Image (tube, rainbow, N blue to C red; front, side):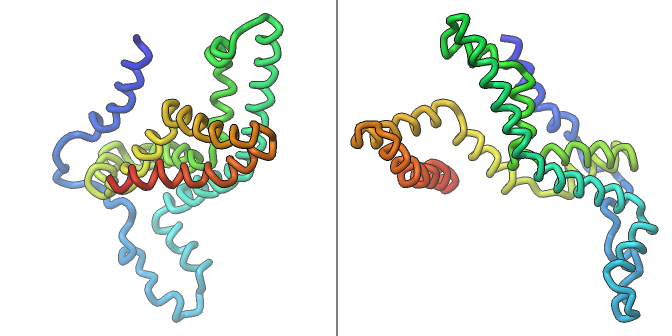
Length: 220
C-alpha cells in the first residue's frame, strides 16, 4: 500500500516544486547567443574550436553541460554490458530459486534490486533521461534553484515529450505485454510452436503489434 503512494508522490513532486508564478527576474539560462559577441569569429577564421573556447570562457557552464553530454554518450556504449550483467544475475537468481522449488511468480517477485537497477541503467531509451537529472543538479549547483525553476517552468515546452513518455509507458505495461505474448503464441501455434514458427511470429507479427499498439494510442 505504501509503495504506490510513494511512487505517486514522487511522480507529482516535480510539478509541486515547480508550481507558482513566474518570478520577477531570473538569471538568463541558457546564455543568449547574442550575449557571446562571437558573430564574426568564423569570418575571422577562428573556427568552431575558437567559438566553443570563447563561449566556455564567457559561461563556464557550457563546459559542464558538454561534459555531462559526453558522459551520456559514453553511457550508451556500456548499455549492452549492463543489460548482459543484469541478465546474468537474473539467471543466477532464477536457478537458485528453482532449486528451492519456487514458482515463476515468486522468482519474479524476489528478483534482487540490483538486477532491476542494472537493467534500467542498460536501457538505451532511459540513458539521456538519467543524465538529465545530473544536468539539473549541475544547473542548481552552478546557478541556483530559482534559475532552474524558471527554466523548467517557463522556458521549456513539455507537451510533445511528455505525451510520448505517457504513451510509451502505457504501451509497456504488463497487460499490454501479456496480450502481445498471447497473440504471438496464437500465431506460433499455427506452426506447432516450433522454433521456426516462433521466429516467424516474432519477426512478422511483433513489429506490426508495435505499430498497432503505439501509433493508434498516439493518434487518440
